[in-house]
Length: 113
Image (cartoon, rainbow, N blue to C red; front, top):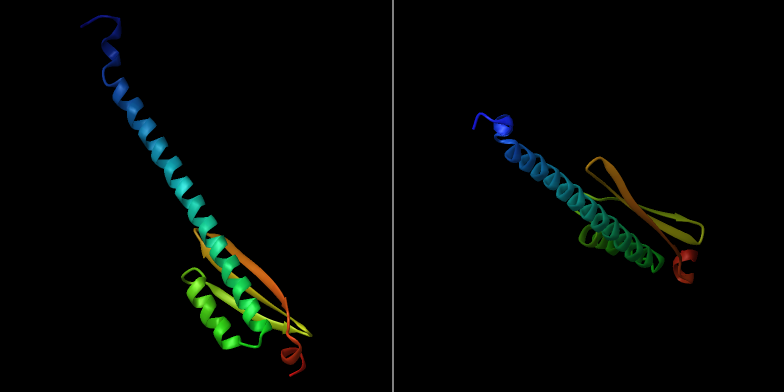
């Protein structure tokens, strides 16, 4: 065993360890991306549904819906401007700001009063 390849002992183990670390990193990055997409979809769904309820004049129910449909820890803003309303739902995940905004035209009885 004192030949030319005697210094390569354990080389395969090191290469396997590096490969496994790389694989774990790629899997963690993929999982973070999937979680970001899920959070974005939840923000979009919550904003859309809340805007629809605000357009009907049901602001309290809209806030409850955002709390139920939106991602945990989400922040939301409900605003009315003239005969339109918009709802913005945002959340911070892994240092990235995710959010969605939905607009709706107020129903005639709601816009007048």
